[in-house]
Length: 98
Image 1 (cartoon, rainbow, N blue to C red):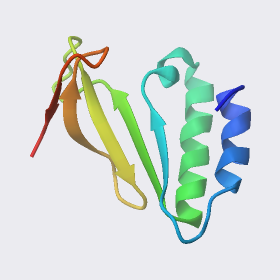
Image 2 (spheres, rainbow, N blue to C red):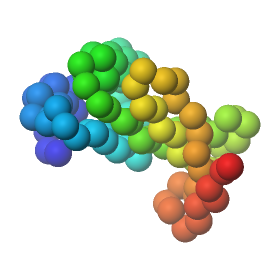
Image 3 (cartoon, rainbow, N blue to C red):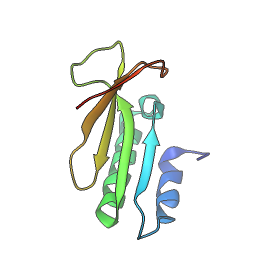
Image 4 (spheres, one colour):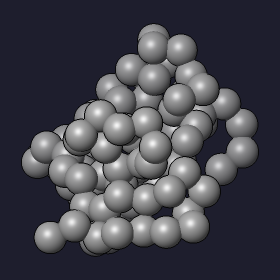
C-alpha cells in the first residue's frame, strides 16, 4: 500500500471479497502516527470488521510491558486481540506462544 494510511485504508478495504478473509498486517507504522490518526485507523478496522471477515495482525508492546521486544498480536473480528508470539524488533527471532 502506498500513500497516507488513514486515507488509503478505507479504499483498500472496500476492495474486499465477501467470500475471503482479509488480513491487514502492520509491523511498526502505527507508532509513527499521532494518537488521533492511530485511532482513525482502529476505527476504520472496527467498521470493516463489522461488515465482513477481517483479521488485523500487528506488532505492539508485549503483554509484560517489556521494551526489549515486540508482541505479535492478532484480532479476528468480532473477538478481542490476543498476543500469539514475541519477536525481536527486526525479526531476528520469533517465539510462538501457546
